Image (tube, rainbow, N blue to C red; front, side):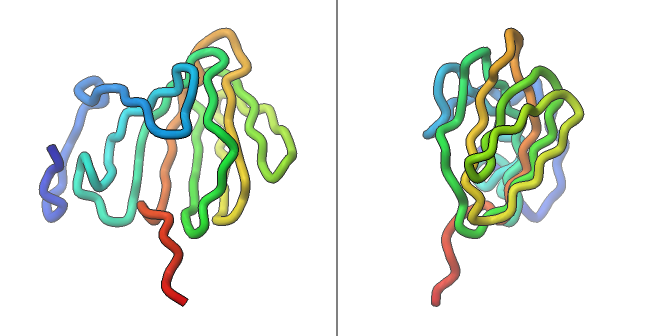
Amino acid sequence: MAEDPRHPFIRNIAAVPWREFPGHFGGALSKPLAMPETAGTRHIDYRISMYQPMAHVARHKHAVQEQVYHVLEGEGLMEIDGEAHVVRRHDVIFLPPGVEHSLSNTGLVDLVFLVVTSPVTDDAPPA
């Protein structure tokens, strides 16, 4: 149930269930911590994700959304516009709109990371 977006809230990560999202495969799970459907946010999608070994998100891009990833645990391979990058604990990745990307857990332990996306929808503004 979404909280009232006019009021602040405190949420414990342990209370939020893991979910599968479209385009994420092989044990790629996320906890939607603050997003429109779960917290009534209007401009931010904030989640923690856990990709089990070999899990991945399909290559995609966002028309208007920016994303910031912060790797907390594990190691993976992030492809950005066709170039592969090893990402690991303490790495922060910024993806501007229009950049094709994917992420795979290439390690033997879970890849855990935070993701902030803004705006919350990828609808291009009317021309």
